[in-house]
Image (cartoon, rainbow, N blue to C red; front, top):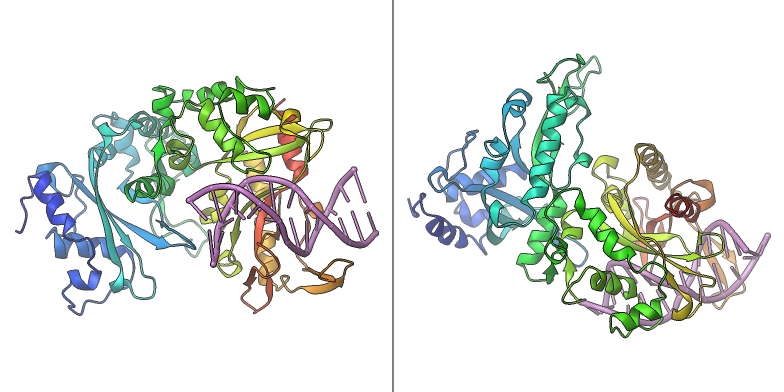
Length: 470
DNA sequence: GCATGATCATGC
DNA sequence: GCATGATCATGC
């Protein structure tokens, strides 16, 4: 063996030699057929580290207590991101019910993890390139209490007989994701059902595995590649108890409720001008005690929390504008399933920060910080959003992105109108242009050209949220 | 005064 | 040069 499997340093040194290698390099160009991406992990384990495939509950490097996890990355428009959640271990409902966190299978796997990040090449898996090695330790991480809470949360459901109601959304970092092949048998019954630990409700539950959420490993990846500097809210506000996180953030932010943006600019010695679009982001970082307003907020990225400022008309609580998200590629959108969709991720959790003014163009003296709040879609809201998302998906598939020109008394002389549903025809979300200008375009699968599109939250819906939050 | 398509401008 | 947050501007 070319490394000492009982010694962490030796393992890491040997792992570091992988950086810059492709899968082909590792296989020394042996003609091994690779059908799917899942096999990349096996190849690295077997052909580099000499670990035979196994389903042992013990860490991969047993003597050193280190677990090996191979994480695929994908190239996005302007950055490289983690592609998917990282499976940690299968859940055995009966065993889980009897464990404690400290003795748990999940914690045993998470204590020390050697993460290997590689850039997944979907055209030729063998060209996939190893980018980075990272030894991560649970007890060095300041948010072990969040992971522990996730685990306890899942365990409680299982003990109480509610394993059939588990979902990823009840957890922050370590989540019970569906595992198994999926699908239904010929009687229409789900295939991946297993017996619960507590059978008082007489229902089977879906097979699940503990996984680290994509946002969590993605933040780690970003930090490792030094693309961004991070500060932690848990550190800056000294949070050490789960459930206090959101409250503490809001407490600190809402101390400044009612102050004008100008006042806040003075209080925090900022030089805000009315056009800068990061004014609220800057104020938030000051309010939560960050050293630098340039730092990214670690937990917001880990937990998939998005911050959205809403400029609102004071007299009627009506937002001046709808809220936009990132633009999409139509051809990717129509291939997505709601459960794994990009948009579902965007609205996972949002911190809304209202700014009240009487006019859009009010000066900084006449714009006031409102009461901030966190929002995640309720079951009912998610149902509607899913419906509307699917409706737009069908519309795009049906070719409703085809545009026609309508005469207009503007410089250009016309505007382009598609057949997609309008904001007034939906309840929560709508699809609308969001390009740099009319040359910033996208093509659908039928070859129709249209200005880049993105989802927006409807104004009336945001108004409802604001009113509820009063 | 609102809805919706169009575009600006900062920041990286 | 581009993504993104923010906002404009026409027409009803």
